[in-house]
Length: 301
Image 1 (tube, helix red, strand yellow):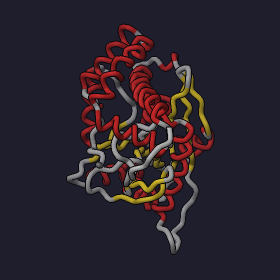
Image 2 (tube, rainbow, N blue to C red; image 1 turned 180 degrees about the vertical axis):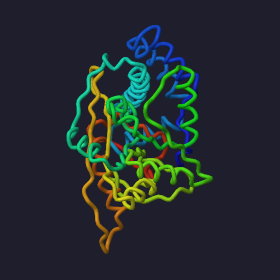
Image 3 (cartoon, rainbow, N blue to C red; image 1 turned 135 degrees about the vertical axis):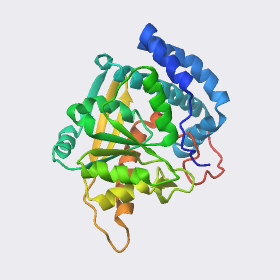
């Protein structure tokens, strides 16, 4: 089962939590999540099944700990969505932030050239945008068209303005490729999610968390060909309303007889992503059968 190009969750749900944040506060919104989780586990069977498989077969947890992982995963996702809107609505003062390799990252942004940033559906990737300050106006986030329309609708209804821009991806044409190239030519920054593909989109395969998995070839192929700096970026939630931003600058790559540059770049990305997932296992938010196969196994509880 592949991802369909649209994140689960309706506009009403987003608007409900935004209203709760505005009128009752962040803590009240967190509290309401407990009721949402009780609903979500049985009524989102595909997401629940994929998280269960991830917990049991990738993380190797027993049944009891896997049940706990289900609750922690859904609760953390809800917190992250609440935080995203709270921070973009001007409540960043209620949070703490920590940065790894930030100076190296800023040196790249100050080098007056285009930059490609590749993240993943872990943590709260988008929450870092307000902290790019003057760099924010040069950020272009690449999203599938279905996701872009939903986010745009929510932002417009709540009067939330963002410095950065969106580049919607439509599978029926290549307009987004030209927009990405133009943004890089203007020495702006293009941000991808490197861990999801849709339908017949070209993919590359490598070992991730001990099993073979497929990744979209587009971000890595483009990054290898454009000859611009590439940064892997993850914003992970920690205890006490704290976010830890991780910036990993990719190493220079060159074609070899054995591997193409895009495959080498993918492997660098996967190594960085593995470290993050192992450190924050409950913040893996790909709710479909991400790995190629889930072979039947017996587990010792």
